[in-house]
Image (tube, rainbow, N blue to C red; front, side, top):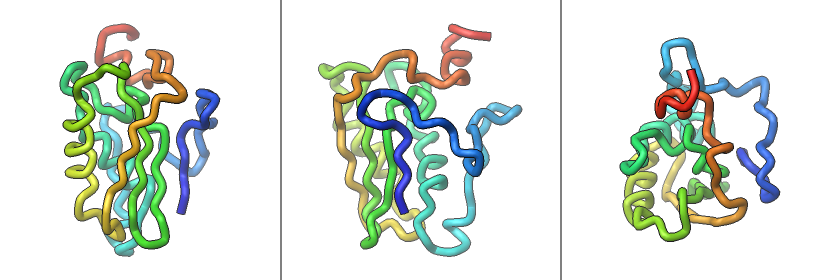
Length: 140
């Protein structure tokens, strides 16, 4: 099972019609339960779980900030999360590693988590979701 949210060129992949947009009317993303019921890794469920990881400097979750570039699960159950940080000098890499592992620990079908911090494409505020911009007061 593979799902990458962003390709190397920095252009977002258009939203898939079978995946929720993540900006529900109540501001909460419904947690996918199919993985829990089937005891199989569900990439959408893993992304939903990562909504619980908040960037402590900004106060917004890492998915809506656009920091998560991709999630996939290998055949042996290793969840590979590719993400970036807001700046290369960001001192939060150890925190993010712990927070991502903690969020995904115990998810069905996930035996381990491999977090890869990457710098290409570089993060920019253009990668933030509308909801993140609203939370920060940048948009209405």
